[in-house]
Image 1 (cartoon, rainbow, N blue to C red):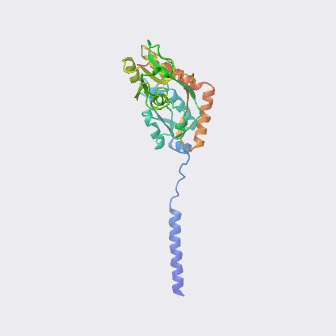
Image 2 (cartoon, rainbow, N blue to C red; image 1 turned 180 degrees about the vertical axis):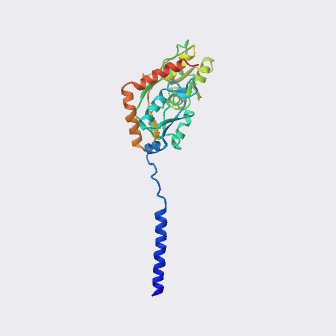
Amino acid sequence: MKKVIALLLTFIMVLAVFAGCSANKPQAKNEPQTRIEKIKAAGKLVMATDAAWPPFEYIGANGEVSGSDIDLARDIAEGLGVKLEIINASFDTLSTYIESGEADVILAAMTITEERKLTFDFSVPYTVAQQYIIVKENNNDVSVVEDMAGYKIGTHLGTTGDFLICDAIDLDDGALNGTGASYAQYKALPDAALDLNNGKLEAIVCDVLMAKNLVSVNEGLKCFELFYADGTGTSEEYGVAAAKGDAEFIAKINEIISPLVADGTIDGYIVKHTEIASKMD
C-alpha cells in the first residue's frame, strides 16, 4: 500500500513539474497573417518599380526615385498608416520581388493583361494609355503597325510595347511576321532614342507619355498613336500589382486610389511629372 501511495505521489509531483513548465513557457505572439497586417507590423509599404519610365518613375534631380507612380504609392502608404519604401530594379525582374515577399506592390506603369493576371492581382485601373510609335521627323512612311515591315524596332524589355512588337514579328499570324522586320529590346528607352537618332533603329514603340517625353528631350524625332491597318487601337490600362490571393489588400488599395482617379488627382500627378521630366537632361 505504501508503495502505491509513493508511486501516486511521485506521479502527482511529475505532473506538477510539467504543469509548472507549461505555465512558465512564454506564449507565442500572434503573428500577422494578412498582407495588411504584415505591412502595418513592419511599418512600411514596399514598392517595386523601374525608375526608367518618366513621368511615372524616374531618377529625380536629387538622385531619388520620383514620378507619378511614387506619388500614388505614397498615397497608398498613407492610407495604410505606414511609410513608403522603394525597390528600384529592372522591369523584367519586378515580379521576383513580389514572389519572394520582398515587395508588397509593383507600381511601374504596368499594363493589366490577362497573362499578368495569372501571376498578380491588380487594382482598378488608375490611368489609361496608348502605344505610340517614335520615328525621325522626316519619316512620313509610317502610320500603322503594318507599315513597319522591314523595320528594326526598338522596345523597352518586358513592357506591353515589347510584347506587341515581339508578337507582331514572331507569331505566325503576326502583322509583321515574314516582312523582314526585327526588334531590339532595351532596358532603358533613352538608349533606344539615341540609336534611333544614330540610324541603328527605324522606330521605337512604347507608351504614349514615355514616347512624348523622349521626343521632348531628343531633337529630330516625332511620335503618334499606333493603330493596326484595320483601325484597331492599342490602348491599355495601368494597375497596381500585388501577390495573388489577398482580396482584402486589393480592396483596400482600390478604396484608396478610386477617389484619386475620380477627382483627377492621379492625372495631376502625371501632368506635374511630365513637366518636370521634360526639363531634365
